[in-house]
Length: 558
Image 1 (tube, helix red, strand yellow):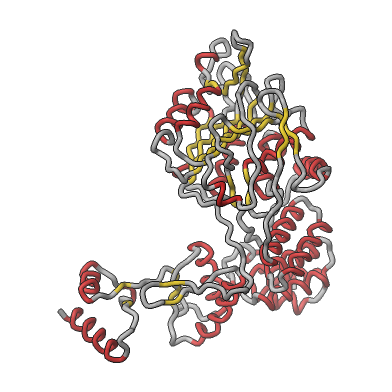
Image 2 (cartoon, one colour):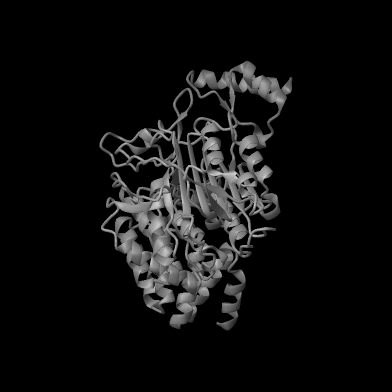
């Protein structure tokens, strides 16, 4: 009764002050319960709660409040942030938070009398195009088999499968519960078919879902009495003398593909075989995403033909095919720079690259029944700030990527046709359409992300050029400024490094990693006072951060 009296009397008072007052109610300290919600419903009020807590009441450092809020926003992607109006540190932190979120492309919603809404840009105002694949759910079956009992053992297939599964979940947002991974003894014929039929076939996937299937293992080809070749993927329990009955034929795969309701399905087979009738895929229109949403896709990319061996000795414990595939998914497969990697782009990158560095000829096509749609990956913007812990590629990976890049540079442009093999023994020309218009912010992000790829390959001059281009397009791009400064540090150009890291901190004073990088630059430049200040600031912001031990060790040297 006391709660009812407080709520209703306060609501009456607010109505007297403003009859159009917002019907929103926040329970003190978030103490929301069923009784209170029922009371609000009777009074015509809506409960409103935060999902991001600034913790400004417990944190006296404005910069760490900023970092905490921005990190939570990046994790949640949307929400309501709780602040307290009695702390001066919140007043200092809020403008920095707003600047950071606006720079990262976030918009702010207001109450319009009925709901929260975001104001549309004024007519003629520049706005970034929103890139979205439009899928509701993402599913995957990932299979890798090394430990065959009766077929020759392989070395890298299970590792390849795990890397693909990790990429799908970590980079492209596939829920782990919807990525079915079968490795070695798990990958029996029955288990593989059950994964398709019990989890994905018929109405188990939705019309607007996508399904990605990856297989790494043996493939085989059998010539039928008609003279036609029929390809098979080999489960772990198959017998070479009986694979016609105990392996999985490509006709089975085709039937599985047709049984799924999912709009777009893509099969990537790191196995060599031949014998699958494919149809020619159509080119994309200028309104690609809108058209693509209406057309189903059943696409397949394979590592090679029947008379070829999978190159099982690529970098980092991967086959050559899977290594190149992973590089494509990391962003290199976005051939037209529109922020999307389509099935056709994946094939147009992977097939000639693998052919250039191995004896394999990957093949690509669309299964019968496909309506000319494209499986689509959306390339996430990199959030990485370069630092001493950033991993770079091994020497063999860099060498292989250099050969791949040389093959790619032989092309005349994204719109130039790329000729690849099909599984019927012929060839087909793939055309990647030119990207539509993009904003300076989008082009800056693309240049920054390309710079990160080049840094990992230790191509420092090329990385400098990309980060510089990003900053020309977007001068307030703190991430690119930090990355440029760190590449200069790697090149032992310490004065230039310090200048760009100082610029980073002018844009984003709370970026702890930039303080750590700045300390290293000044340390090697011989400016002990500024190095000490930078390390000390880093420790104030991140006393338990990954670079804390390094910062303390450097301070001891000073």
